[in-house]
Amino acid sequence: MGNYVLKDFAKYVCLNILGMLGLSCYILADTFFVAKALGATGIAALNFSISIYSVIHGTGLMIGLGGATRYSILKSQNEDEKANAVFTTCIKLGFLIGASFALIGIVGSKTLAVILGADGTTLPLTKNYLTTILCFATFFITNNIMLAFVRNDHNPNLSMFAMLMGSFSNILLDYIFMFPLGMGMFGAAFATSLAPIISISILLLHFRRGKAQFRYIPYKMNWSGVGDFLSLGLSAFITEVSSAVVLITFNLVILSIKGNLGVASYGIVANIALVGVSVFVGIAQGMQPLVSYGYGLKDYMVLKKVLKYAVITSFAIASVMYLSTYFNVNFIIGIFNSEGNLAIAQIAREGLVIYFIGFFFAGINIILTMYLSASEHAKEAFAISMARGCIIIVPMALMLSRIWGMTGIWLSFVITEGIVMLISIFTVANSGKNENDNLEKTIGNIPEESY
Image 1 (tube, rainbow, N blue to C red):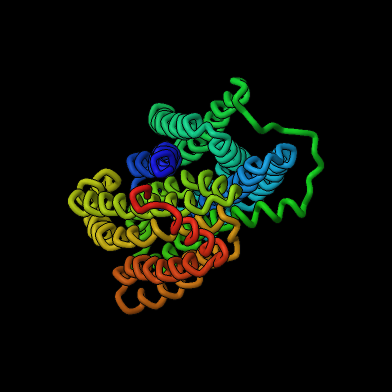
Image 2: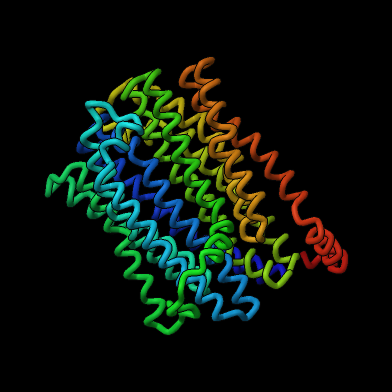
């Protein structure tokens, strides 16, 4: 039993980490090329905009992961027609919400840019980026839905390939649009917006090859069913919106401490951190189909093994990321600090060294949250996500920044994730007592050498 669980875990997680690294490069590529083309002002404007991308991305994850979780549970119980109805509802809902975002982009992007902290210097660039991203929101959301369903339909290879091809096309188009064509900030946003369209085109091969066990069916939306699967994906949404809340809070506080140069420095740290977080999200999303399927079959031994493998993997990756960052911090900053600004370099250096300590805790929090969601403990997952996203980190940032300035900003992330990790472990240990009782009975009947 242990071998097949480990083999499936390694397959799903490795492929999904690669795919999520691809997705995270959407913004990282923008950061690199914007830094080269537009300097510190461009990075600051991009950093004001990224929070909205996180909301759009989180919306797609909420619908996709929530729907795919319910889909996997229904498929394991041979409820094929209900599983197809879930997919159909997800697609319809994604289009509706995407259209709403597009409307905001057309009529309200300037107001939104001001709310996010853009000033006279950064406002034109911020507005430009926001308008473009919001108008393409439907494609970002639909891409996340398709990725989740294809992955849960036993085709993680195609999901990974689609994410990577979307990312590579974004990098290539970023260069073409911003340098040979000189399209500036619009070029960066437009390149990012075309990436999910390319990814969706690749994911459609899942249907052409006859591998798909789900399909779009004529089905009237059942709004009560929407609430069910959205609740299962809510923690993923909160995780992404957490990034947005933290970005907005940190931007506004840093703006008052260090001005636009401080925001640009934080932009470097935050965008590199997005890559790190994407690795942990990759572990969590990779284990989700296994947890949901095992939960549907009430196979508690599988749940235990998958969770153990995920936590060990998270800690190992956090160690590698921190050491790699610590010993290469100047080189990393130099990539994005094209103007060689000493103030930006100094602030970002301290930020990377302190901020990345939080990954040891954040990885475990993301994994435990996904575990709870995938096993129908949506309320507990939501509570943990809210604690990470705003309940603890916002007051922590405001308080510590008053005491230690920028150092307090970086420490607020570390301390928040550490506190939430303790809450997460306690919550998982105390959730589903009946399941744990069954698990203990199962473990008691299995020889030690079979673990």
